[in-house]
Image (cartoon, rainbow, N blue to C red; front, side, top):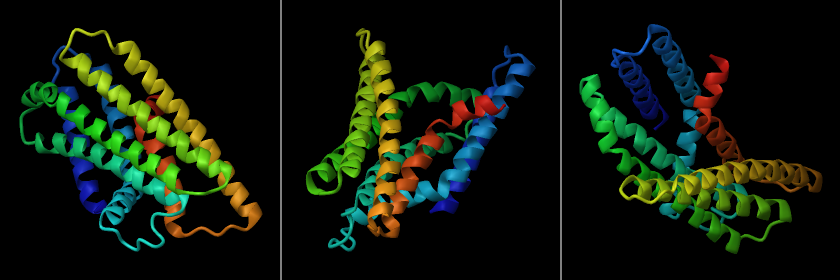
Length: 242
């Protein structure tokens, strides 16, 4: 799975670079800088792909009811499942760009705006599924307070992201001024996500102090949450580097 995603993301980086060069009025210096940002951002995402593929596998194992007695039970299991839905829709968006990659750059640019609603719809579905799975986890799991707080915060973050995508969708085909709602929801999502990571690190520390042993899937879920942050902010990180 990771190798297939690697090939698709490599093609996605190439088509984004081609799109940047397709605008004749853009100065060479701006084109060069934007291409560097795209390549740096793509490189960060490529490095994250093995972990992101693990998230998709985690969601798949839940769907097929693999080992129902022990998975998902730990907090990290539920994080892995929820991030799997989220990552799956992000990869679907990359697949859309990949499917358009055989067109010439200007045609891709025109079609991009036509599939914008599809992109936002997929993201809305992914974040909603993630929020619902974490809501189920909050009702089912009986853990110490840091892990309960982690699940609650990440669930709120995913629900806020869902609201953000919904506001963007509605604003795309109506006259409603929903940009403030979308911006506020996105800020809340990022804030909740960062607080969730802090609570997650505290939960790991308390587990270590209390001698609580966790399995590999639990730590995979923790890793995925951190990597998703890095992948999501890869563009901003690249602009700081370049």
